[in-house]
Image (cartoon, one colour):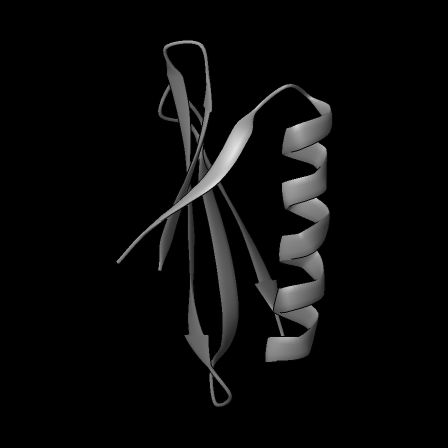
Length: 69
């Protein structure tokens, strides 16, 4: 699943994927193309981290998330 945050003309893309066997990954692609990936062991941990990331983006003035599959 992809989510996007927007601030002005800039976008940040967040991708969340994985499963119980391999863990869950949250990959964030910054407007300049730089990527960072976090790996989490469970869906609960990934969900909790995703909520933290959303809050941080909002605190930094980003609008979203906008979902896409």
